[in-house]
Image 1 (cartoon, rainbow over the protein chains, first blue to last red):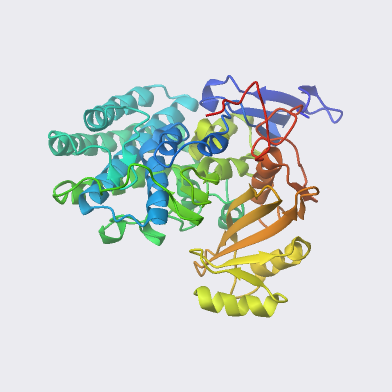
Image 2 (image 1 turned 60 degrees about the vertical axis):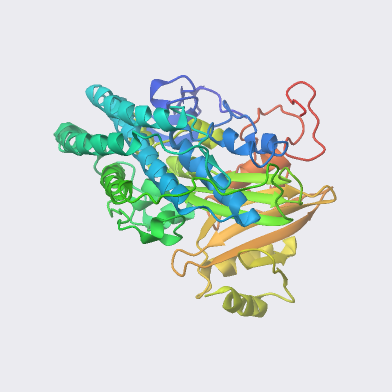
Amino acid sequence: MIQEVGTTEQGDLVVNLGPQHPSTHGVLHLVVTLNGETIKKVEPHLGYIHRSIEKMCESLSYRQFIYVTSRMDYLSSHINNHGCALCVEKGMQIEVPPRAKAIRVLMGELTRLASHQLWWGAMAMDIGALTPFFHAFREREAINDIMEETCGARLTMNYMVPGGVMADLHPNFQKRVKEFINFFRGKLHEYDELVTGNIIFKSRMEGIGYLSPEDAVSYGCTGPTARGSGVSCDIRKLYPYEVYGELQFEEVTATGGDCFARYMVRMQEMRQSISIIEQLIDNIPEGQFQAKTKAVLKLPKGEFYSRVETARGEFGVYIISEGGTTPYRIKFRSPGFSNLSALDHMARGHKIGDLVAIMGTLDLVIPDIDR
Amino acid sequence: MNKEELKIRLESLLVSPTFEDAAEWLTVIIDPEVWEGFARQLRSTEGFDLDYLFCVTAVDWRTHFTVVYHLTSTVHRHMLVVKARLDRERPEIRTVSDIWRTAEFHEREAYDLMGIVFTGHPDLRRLFMTDEWKGWPLRKDYEDPVNMIKL
């Protein structure tokens, strides 16, 4: 049962945060038990945007189900599609052409940049700084325009298909991405000047929401949340897919384990993403952008699991096939779901204002959690 | 440890274990009765150190359920998949939320959508569906004429 809102016998105050609260970015409902202003317990109530995507996928073909996954973590839609395409390719043993591999990685890194930009703006806004939000959206707009030109969409991309990508790159793509990288590098410096060194910002972030490496692993945290605690968990490095194995980039980790460490990991990741894009943008191989595949895909009987690194952490696709044209059972292991489970542990003992900062650095996307 | 080494080590832990060979990662099928003790051994035995449970899910095979645990080690980077076959009438298995904290949420999800009862779970309630919801949506025989659209 949902805990009653009001005062408990011990004199604690139970309040609702969300589902209609601006800092919960969507429909996350937290029931918070407070002693004065100190948090004693945070209980997430999920399901306000649950669409049972896993059930839906059981009646969709292996080409169709990929589109549904754009609606999960809508800020990493390219990477979600990528994970699903990889899983189907693993089952069908399709060899993806080199050009498609490079395009996929480029799109993935642009998505990561766009996602981290939105996170940066939204998180700063949550803790009271409104200006960064407008800065972040200005730069994100440039990425969305680039995406729109090639994919025809700005949010739910549906660009990755089993065997490659849906269409070839737009002729302007390389030129515009280079322009954007040059422009954004300067802006990243501006981000640091505006927020990172800000004394008020730092005092809201440092020492808040500590997560030890052991707890990060035990709670199944991935992505910048776990890397902020010093846990090495970047799927791109540990289990390289596509061309990540051939690229020069570093897995960013920090040892602080607090909100500021997670913040710094994401800021550094943006620089790494820029570096990956720069290495690839002039080296996109010529050739096919899609392998030849049958119109109707049939996965052989068996189980297939693929893992990719989204902007939030590890995204897993687990397909159980009975040999038909639709999956028998499909499971999406979403990064936000596991990261959220650590929220209660991180928030206890802090003030209610810090809860918003902790949620901000977890970078929660609710449709990704509810599915 | 690679797949073969893991297999040999597991044979010393379990009484006549069954393996699935076709899968990408080593898959061991266990009796639900032994799961709790086995899980503790996997977590803390030196050489295994399977400290990271990254996926818990349940599959409805119409005649029975299978609970699937995907485990990996942040120290050795090896993978292990553990499966347990549960009775369809009484789908019960011991919780591992005290061993891997992440299981608390994942098991609640499996309970909510598939109706698997995890005994000893600290807070086994509906997670996505409302508290009054009837039935287990991810089961193959689930019918909902109002909310479900058949393709």
